[in-house]
Image (cartoon, rainbow, N blue to C red):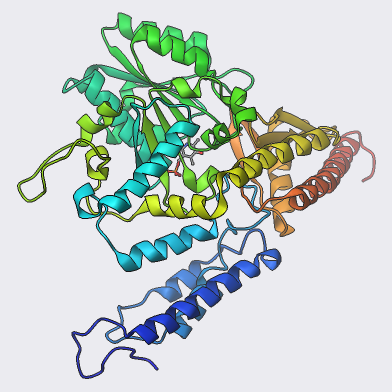
Length: 496
Ligand SMILES: *Cc1c(COP(=O)(O)O)cnc(C)c1O
């Protein structure tokens, strides 16, 4: 069974229904089998795969092949050498997860393949996407005038926000505009600024306080200095949950400043905005609802598969003015219904709205609130236990669900030694295979970090993470002390 299509008719590309069913069942079996195997997967596959990548280079096949060997290649060869981002122990970076109903929605969207770029081509389907945007709007506390757009991720959401603000505040006079981010902001803001025509010499990096939050005094001064130089401060980007340490900038105070200065206030909530779904946690994000625009990443905190970002803009008209256009070959714009191509750069596109719609319908929002509240609680509990570990210094207790720390001890006499030991701690715990951690350099120091955001991470994985960190920290500090004593001993002329 290699060629599944009629052998005597090369131009025939439609698979017979029974073949499609069989292929579909085969894929579902493999994919669900893969998910069932999560508990035995290493938390980080062996990604030293240069030789494999070279071996995989191949010409396009001239004739069709059988599915099974291709699935073997994918599931046995290509998928294992990767970070296990679907794993319950994935505490590295900002976890995603990838909730199953979204895959079903994509299958439906891809097989029915209706055109959802413009409202007229599939009005009721587009309405489902509009519903989801409306839900996000309400959960984030944005007003009814807000509009949004689904993007491929947080980076593209931020790009669209800067472009909308630039259009509104600067018009064609782009060079006079200046933009403000903290030193801890995600690097996508710098990329997005450049894409939106804001050159690097117009981007100001504002220092942070000891909790890694943007310093309001420094921001105020930077804005004043730019005004005095004849420039036009137009865009302040706060972060609601930084990638390094999970810091939430003082959103309320920055909103006040932005209002006084006539600046657009964007909040990058790619990691943190999801916690606004949980009413009890909203005080942690006070001021978020006042933003002029907000980046959300449903593929992080709403557990969707990668490729799902979103932008909300308080005054939806600013987003529409940026993107709205007409053409002789398109139906005239209507005003009543949400129309994706009028609010985003894409025309033809996939159907992200269905991914969220079907997932929320199947799961229900109550479970989302419970899961997000649990992730925050798990991070807080782990912090309480880790703060009792000798030598482990908490640089950033969780403002949301991310904590960061480093090692100190008698044998670690320099910053470099502490950095190396902390990096070794991340590596040794990850190498054990149960959980994956990652590190970062923040304000000149290497920090180990642990972010709880996968829906699969439960108390069990957190207990493993704490126990392994405790054990490996003790070993590392003992090793460092022994090495140090040996050096001191040698220096003092004692035999070693
Ligand atoms: C992940 C992240 C981004 C970038 O989003 P992508 O979806 O990866 O493009 C931006 N900001 C923060 C705070 C993030 O965590």
